[in-house]
Length: 248
Image (tube, rainbow, N blue to C red; front, side, top):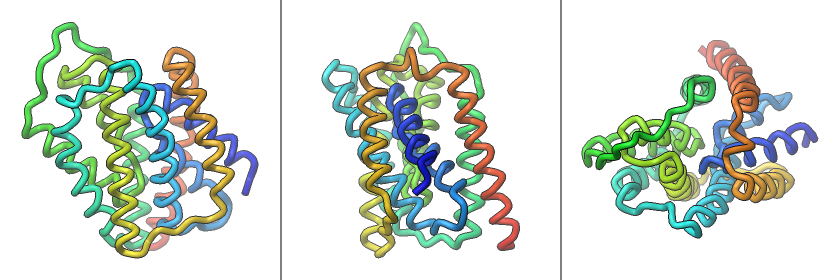
């Protein structure tokens, strides 16, 4: 296993956990850049497992400071959990997986390069139907591709003025945790749970999550670091698009 991959996983876990995310998009981007071909089942399983670990540590930190709102998160999670389970059960050909993952990583890169969304002064409840539909869509992508969905959920919650930035981060951590668990369960049911030599990545992700959850977003979510991570995501997008086009 390349040393740069282990270090990258540690840095991605630290950066993402500081804002309540699991880092699956970053892990998948790094794994897709490893020389040679890694099977989609192994990539998705590894990313979901690391997501589960990192968001579990972050979720515990948010619960301790009382920032998790069950009223905010439950409509999203209610629809996303069965959708993530279904996504984990969905068989995807390599070409479809590569193209869908490239699209998801491209959206994640755009999100990282965009101006951070600020919490609104006057919060308002999120419409139940909007939460259910968006939760289901993000949940299916979580299970099928091995992403957590937090990088899409956080800006959505802030755009809808449903939470402060810290509450949105706590909501995302809970959302990602339950979706990662459901996605892994779906993969286990269809016999698609496949790990490589992944223990060094688990240790790196756990250490990064501990650092990120303690240090907070103030030091790890800088514009410079976001740009670096966005470049990594875009490099992975290019490689995945080449794979998808070649298989076409």
